[in-house]
Image 1: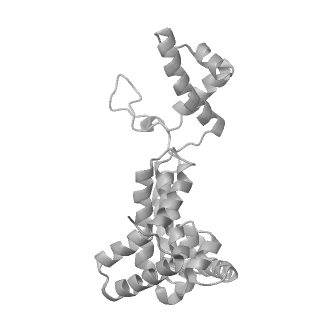
Image 2 (image 1 turned 90 degrees about the vertical axis):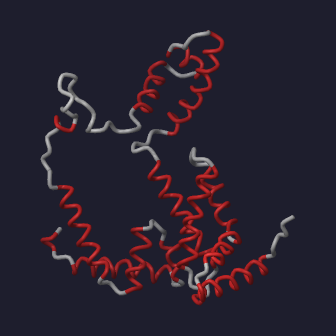
Length: 258
């Protein structure tokens, strides 16, 4: 039977493990830290389960990746609690996962609710009628108009954009949808890559404190409060570093390069 630790016992054990891990970077010690702090991941996973359709185990694995990154980057000498430092990493990893797995096009919540209800109604009517129900029958059971039900179906059919690589001509299998579309900005991808390189070069030239703030806020989608907690500074300091960093990067990138 597992014995629950008090907050004081948890804190002491955590600090002891981190001191040990910093000295030897032993993966066994890191795993002990991971196991000790799994409650942070479980709490965050339970929060997101109510807002998505992913299963618990998948989100738990993703959250653990964020926790491992937090463990590797945590500096015990900064003096702030590991939980405050780790939660943004866990949350950010889950958010990025959901963002990557999510549909490209968002549809209204009511459409999602009606579609979920319709799945149950279709099964019910199929059993009762011994055939596939008509749209009129489904709409009546849902308590909506036929037009609204058609809109719901159309919204779900169009959740994912059509690939430009699909065959656009039955007579010529080599002809794709992309071939039929004019490209007036064929250099857009190349220019985007060049802009990315310029920004990365400018970012690397900033002082360490300012660079970290910009990376946390703009690259990891953390709030200014979360960034302040991680770096052990005030929110005002974070705000000032953001403004300072943006001005500095603008000066580093020539106006004619945008």
